[in-house]
Length: 155
Image 1: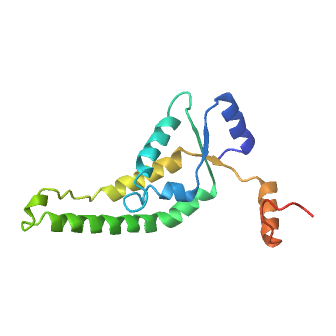
Image 2: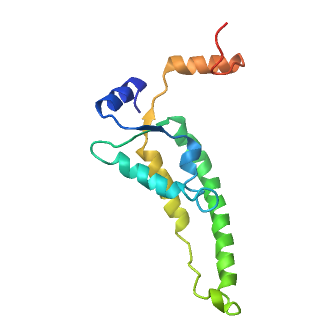
């Protein structure tokens, strides 16, 4: 994990775009066949950009993203499995002998689920993790306790 000050110093030392990823954007990769097909090439591009020297992009995420990913990757994979099963059923019907025009289209997808999970995890791991700073956490907790929006001005 890195402090905000360390990350700012790194960005200033190696100027490049900064992208802050949240849990949903990383989990969307595992949901790609059903909801977010464009997330797969985008994730691949982002990972490649982080591996360039000098760094072509700075990917950042908060430390809570790992826990949220761990808690939700199973349901994202289940949604993908449901979508893939539906796709395979359509192909199975379309490639039946009675529908000769569609024969030969069936492409089993047994490994796509694991490929998408691995890509999602690779993007997660490509991000630099921002360490929580005590003062910021305290301020956030106080806003929640006082039912204040983050942008609300102090009275």
